[in-house]
Length: 404
Image (cartoon, rainbow, N blue to C red; front, side):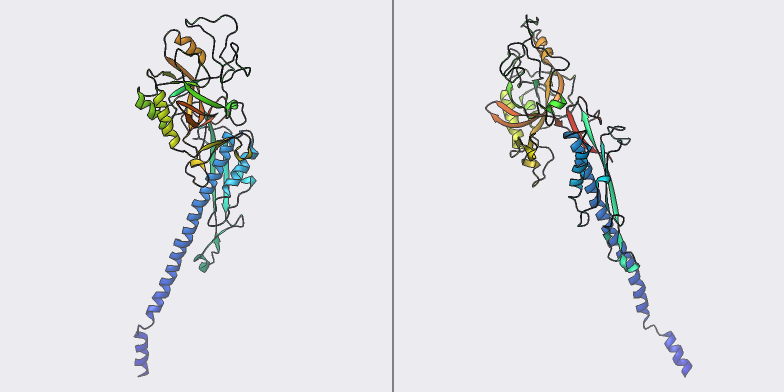
């Protein structure tokens, strides 16, 4: 009888479910640790990468647009921006030693140059700010960590797309019929040839090596940076004056195409040596209409002559304001082609209506007054183009890009 009872207890299945549930709970905990804690790590890793990217770009922007030789300022800019981006709710760890200026890696537009900024950023045990775990604690894993690195490059070049279809004369050396103030000014005219293309007698104006706008002059702190220019329509029968523009053909002839090229981006790349035809028709009206369309894209942007207390001036408000974050560059900062006044003045005597481009400048469109457009000169922040390199020089087109 006792033997039969023992056999009955051994054959009973009561309690077996508890064993299975216990085994399943172990599996669920392991799976939870994988999904939740591993998910925390990857979410934090993405946030850390965003912070490192932002810091590297800020450092490259400082090199490109403020002072290429001031690595201390670029390092501080990178640090300031990187720590504004929390990683899993806390400020990541990044110090001065984590911002370096290595030789640009292979594959970068400026490979082998010293125009790169690298930011290393941490949220881990090594820097005493690890990420938490939730289910991992069950198996003795109390924390975890991530790190990220990013490299950005300051790019410099001569050519860009999105150039507006009106060309202005480059600066020249003023010697004839000088108008106060002495030297080149917005009220002077280029006087070198007569209507037959012959050199005028006596002192004449000149344009050659050493003349014209330079990257230093239109960069922050330069004598032409923030120069207020009024664009007025010129024609072959008038003397060349600063700010007098000539409508040029970028891709197609006609008022509609010309107006569209002002308000939108024409994909043709323009740079030194590009030869453009002058539009045959009167484009005063289409210029005004296209400019009005352009200003309407960012009506609240404005020029601040003392931006952030720098004393240099710059663009603020509109889509670039911190509150909106709608753009990094206002659409009202445009690229305008600059032509050789000597070649144009000599060529028009023979009836040629071509313009040889020497450089591309940035121009912030301030306002319209009648048919005239006023704005401020500066360098132009283009998107990276083929041929842009990693060293500053005689370049007017500036950009930054993440390269690793």
